[in-house]
Amino acid sequence: MPAKRRVAQLAMLAFAVAIVMFAYANVGLAIDQKIPAGMLGYGLGLGGLMLVAYLVLAKFAPWADPLILPLVTLINGLGLVMIYRLEEVKAFGASASTQLMWTAVGVVMFTVTLIVLRDHRALQRLTYTSGALGLFLLISPLLPLIGVSQNGARIWIGIPGLGQLQPAEFAKLALIVFFAGYLVAKRDVLALAGRRLLFIDLPRARDLGPILIVWGLSLGVLILQKDLGSSLLIFGTFIAMLYVATQRTSWVLIGILLFIGGAVVAGTIFDHVYARWEVFLDPENQAFYDRELGGSRQLMQGLFSMATGKILGTGLGQGHPDLIPLAISDFIFPAIGEELGLTGLMALLMLYALLVERGLRTSLAARDPFSKLLAGGLSFILAWQVFIIVGGVTNLIPLTGLVTPFMSQGGSALLANWILIALLVRTSDTARQPPPQAIQDEGMTQVFQR
Image 1: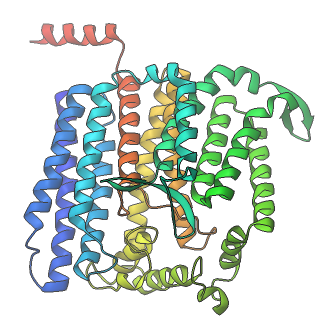
Image 2: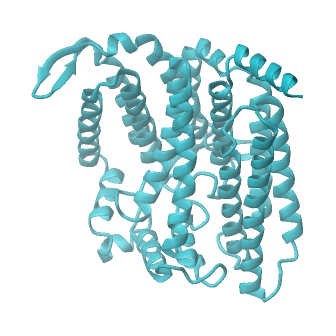
Image 3: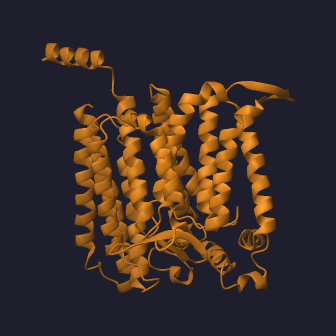
């Protein structure tokens, strides 16, 4: 990549860290009327981590999209600011230093992935191994001794000395690799048309097996683990990748019908699914508001907070995010909405949209089908997760229990998302790198110019 492009990327990275430090200062000035004492440490820590990530990127993936790392840095940094803000009012046991530590581990995972995985296309040879690994990670919380139930959901495993880990966050990456490899091998068969209904060419009945298996897997996650979020992520991502592979709208329609049918059956049979639907339809109902588990209190409090923020917000450090239940995890989005207002929320969503756009651009630029599906799947699951959590806290769809990528406190999601970015960067590097002959011709041109 030309030196000017690398300098521009470093400048954008420095600008992202500067915005985060400015936000830190605003929080301290609003709460204590002074610059936070630990601001220099947080700034040097975040800046140092991103400088390491930049150097590794320049060395091992020099042709990668230059916008991806600055965008992730800014989103991750704003999450650190909000967690620090909650820590200052001693809410929910928030700890910005712990989150910075998890960010450091995430950057380590990012760099290790880039150094070890020199060619992402090697993952295609591990298609079924990735599928088996993803399935094992999904069911691991159901295993005795290591599985842990929390807030009515069994989605955690206990690791001695490390605390709790949510394996579904890593399972989604393994399953995306499996979906990409499988669909590359079977896309010609799955693209065959059967009977025509109205304006749509339906697939053959014998080809419905893969979508039914993934549908059954997602229902199993919903029923056995009570994890609506992971269920939606897995099934929705498979449908999107299936559409990209085959270009058949009929698969999307079949997926929607299967999801609606599964949701109706699960809501009829299982109380925890029906409770989510009740809260979604009537969150102001006092009977739902006072429920001990799965009630509408957190949803209503989040809506009240966003309404308080109005257009421009109350200002960083001048709201009451400590009144929002789970403001450090599921409901960090409404907490930001209260203090930064609708303007801040739209800016945050624009950052996510830019990140997803760069991923989809990578998918379009990729030269082989596996790379196209892998980049498309990684981009879609990030966008899908943001839509699910934002739709849940704004009561557009029922709450699912997912966290906002790169912002919510916790290690599992943060580590998995940094690995996701590493895979996307590696794919981008391969897609944007010119053919060897073009590089040689450019080098000879520069020699003659000198």
